[in-house]
Length: 330
Image (cartoon, rainbow, N blue to C red; front, side, top):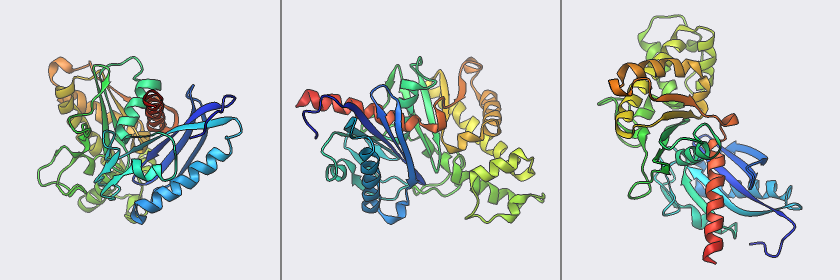
C-alpha cells in the first residue's frame, strides 16, 4: 500500500475476464476512464500464466499514471467468480478449476482486491452508470463466449446462499440437446452465445439446401461477428441462425420473467452488438410467449455503456466498495 500521498488522486482498476478476451480499465473516483487495454485470455495456458500477464499489463498501465494518481484497489470480474470466497469456482469457459484469486493477486498487489461474477459486474455497472440507473428490478444477460446473468431484485444484487445465484445460461431449454461445457445437455448458452451461434450455423448448413457464403468459412475461422455481417447482407443461412437464436432466447426470457418480474432485461456483450438482428426476433418471441399480465410491461434493452464497458465499470464500483471497507476495518 502507498502511504502519505495527499497530492495524488485515487484510481481503481476494473478487469473483465472473458473466455476469449480480457478488458482492463483504470478509472478515477468520478468514473472517468483514464486508460483502457485488452488482451487475449488464452485460458488454455493456465491460470498462473494469465495472472502473470494481467499483472504486467496493470503495472505498465499504472506506471503511465503514477505521477498524478495512486492506485487504491482492484476489481476483478470473471465467469464463475464467488465474491464471498474470493474465488473462481469451476468456470466452464475458463477451465481453471477452483482458484483463489484473492490470494493470487495478493502476491502482486498490496491493496484491496474485490472479486465478483462478470455478469453481476455488468449488472452493477448498468445500475451505477447505464440504462438501469433508475431501476430496482432488472436482469443483465452477458452474451459472450457463454451466457451469464446478473439479477437486481428490489434494488439489490441477488447473490444467493453461496454467492452463485444467476446462472441463467445453464437452465436447460432442450432435453437431450447440445452438449454443454458444464457436463450437461441442452443449456441455454449452448444456443444463445457466440459459441452457440457457430453451432447453429453448422446445424443449418447441414439441413438446409441454401446458397450461403458460410459454406466457405471453416468452423474454427467462423465468428458471431462474421455471421452478423453476412446476415446484414441477407445471407439466408445467417438470417435463419439469428431468427432461431432470437426465438430460443425470447422463449427463455418469457419464462424467466414469470420468476423475477423485472422492469427490463438488458443485453450486454459481443453477441448483443448484432443489434436488431438479435433484438427483433428475441422481442417478437418474448412477447408472444409472455403471460398476458406481463405483455408490454417488460422492456428488452441493449447495454447503455459505450463499447460494452458495463462489467469494467461494475468491477470498479466493487473495487471502490472494497477500498472503503478496508479503510473501515483498519
